[in-house]
Length: 264
Ligand code: 13P
Image 1 (cartoon, helix red, strand yellow):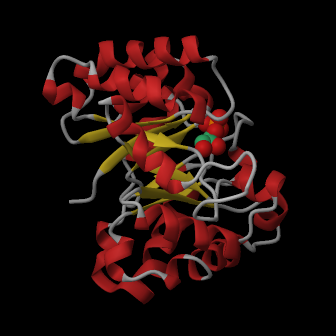
Image 2: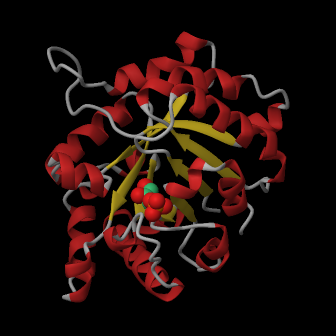
């Protein structure tokens, strides 16, 4: 069975105090989340240590096991003179340093990183390899721009983002990859892909993965991201190849985030 995942991408939002309050509010409601759904909060770097401790402080071990911690980026270099960068090894060290929950995930390939910071498929492959080598799991994002969809190029764009990057991994490495399909035109715009549009491309992503990884593609969780909210999550998550969501804006309110996680 593929893991159902609802992952929040907080992006560059919340002060530290607000972030701690948000995770505590999520923790208070976590008993509502179905047993087979995993929540992930991908916080800013500055919040990881404190959120790690807040997760570890959830009293009920079963509830605690339903929520994991993630980051939103890591460096494409192992260590050294790269001012301002944060390495995969640093991320992996957070949990043990705080006696808290480990950083288990890192989002890589988000369209905002590709678009605003020039991250290419080659750079992303380096980042993914480093993250995996530190025992992190990767939420790898793909998705097309509006012009690309209008030109009917969305399948080609997504195939290239998958082949150039994920096809360089081994089957063993692929077990630690979650794919997120995020059409750029649906991110933060209020416009969501229809369930048919989303299912069509999720199925395409799975069949593309199967070209290289065979049956393992059936085990890969593929998340939808882009203006996903409590009111549309159910119809999206009911689709055969949609295993959950990568949530931006609606992950910043505990009620909405939990609302989405209870939408299966
Ligand atoms: P929104 O949910 O705000 O559209 O953002 C989606 C996203 O980019 C998650 O990574």
